[in-house]
Length: 261
Image (cartoon, rainbow, N blue to C red):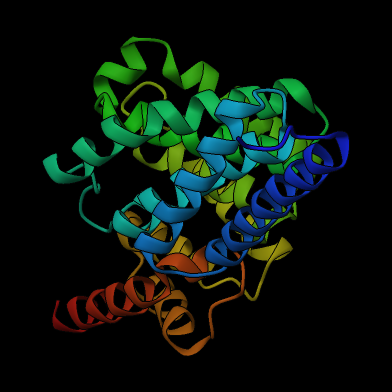
């Protein structure tokens, strides 16, 4: 016959469970520092399990949203605009349709729990960007996504315009650059790209964005200058580290195309 479980045994068991949970959370935090998609996916599993157990746990909700958006950012190169076209391939849109709704759910919950958190605002803006992109740019605009997108990104800028290498300005710039008429606005795109570069001059992503802008605008000299900086500069330790190699290689390809023609 098994002896009864006393109060001390219950306390020990609870402490053991808490230790395991803390170990999982520590592992998840470490995994988020990686630029490997599989590591972010594992972090997402840990945080999502934690959020299922404690829906009002801000750290679990935010961690799940960040981990899921990192998987999408790594696998689809941040969904950054190209000199000629977008990154909304069927493969990428399938990825976004799979992961973006979950990321958005967790990001909305994190923002509701802590509205003044710039980290939650960033996760919400980024996850919504992937969600809207999964619908296709025309369909998302017709469905009213442009207004909500600008609300989320505008909140991020208001909370901290320098956060993540001026991510808010970079996202707003990309929006105005690729949006269809009559929403597209080259002047607003340039203003936000230049603001991002002024706030975070060490960001490779911001130099790449300006290179894309000027290449699309037909100013090869200015485009070349920014693409050269993107190739030469080291990536920061912020979000752009997730697709640093892609930024470098794509900038090199853009330079070669500018030289040839």
